[in-house]
Length: 336
Image (tube, rainbow, N blue to C red):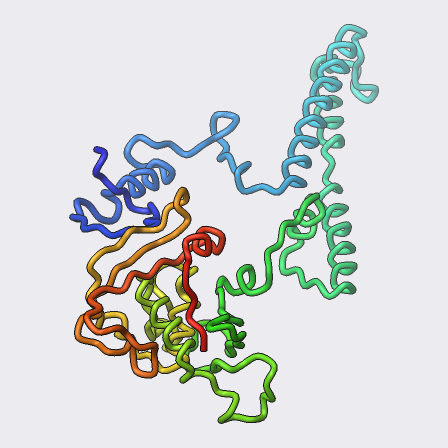
């Protein structure tokens, strides 16, 4: 059905309410897992009618070695069959027993040649080669746990990397912000709202009081407006296995840095919940922006230490998105 959402799908934006119909192995993902595991009609993949097919988990080197072994085997069998036929045709008999049949003697010769053709030294040579490659990589400060990884890395022709933080930790962090014509630095790493603070760029970092910009009007107004246009929350979670706790955002990863920065200047966890959201227009790739309208009636200021509101103001519209899409619709600017 068009209104059905399957397990494993990602919700990119917007809000909705759903009813759970199936769980676990009864879902579509669960059925796929059953087919892969060989249940409900799914059969394990085999080759040569009986041997399990493990080609999906093989490295390129293992696949090439398997092909080489198969080719050597086919050639060896063909040669042995040819020698057997030629020997029987020429009536070759055992020199120590002339009374024996020629075909029996040639069978022994063919089997002996087939056994001798098996390349049992290839695995040893490959292991030694991979060990040498592993030793060379250690000299370049690359630690390899499995020898197969050496060959896999050697097969890579293009390596794509992202900026540090997103690739290594999967975390985006706000490090700078601009508000009211002033540039600010946002300290700390990760999602910890306790680590770091907002300071004015260019001032002496040693002046702890003078350099703390967490109470600046423009900073508090900008960050509160930003979290009013976010659906991401930040909470403390504890790992059930290790017992260690960590700060973890739930929602859009691009909104997490905004929520963390707002917590660093003193906004509580439910600060955005104090403002009733009247309207929300979700972010879309065509509009490249998100819009929310919040109820601010009865307030003379946006927040404690924030910008003043005119008498009779009832709603506050906040729009966030691509800078080029936002700036072209701006007519006024808040200055310090």
